[in-house]
Image 1 (cartoon, rainbow, N blue to C red):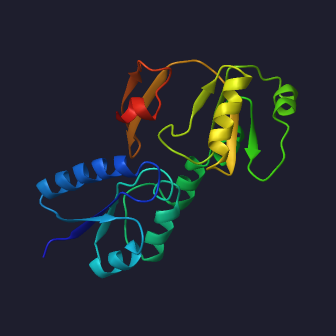
Image 2: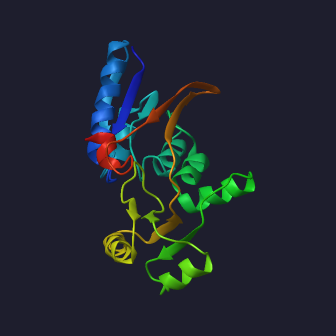
Length: 214
């Protein structure tokens, strides 16, 4: 009997539709390689369905929250099912922009000036900007989203206020950073081997969600 690989896709994040696309592509490639493959949408009672399937391995094709932030990884470790992807701690640290900045600083990696806005905390935004000597344009984004979801470059106070109101309806923590222009370069790494670097030159203002997927 062939080993069963369950491809987790879909999920509950804002990147659900993209996850279906990448998950189905992975499932197709694995089937072509001769594996027994089952696709499973990671929402609702998917854990019970996963237990019944008893896979030899889970291929994690989830995007964003609950898929790349250590959430599903902790479930799989509890179930003692091997999976692809980084582990619980590395996933949660990488996804949380507030925590990852702490790690960068500890390792002497430069980061932009920033501060955190919290939903239930009365914050004087202008005062925070002045204290940190930050100037427009500013970047505003959710602390724990992927694929540039909810990222805005704000050129002035009016633009900032509009985007802040938009984000605060959905997110508890929002990161405000100084804008630093530069090149967008991606490097794929497998194990300890870098597979090459690619410079991305989007036609949009920056490499946002639409530029990545549409």
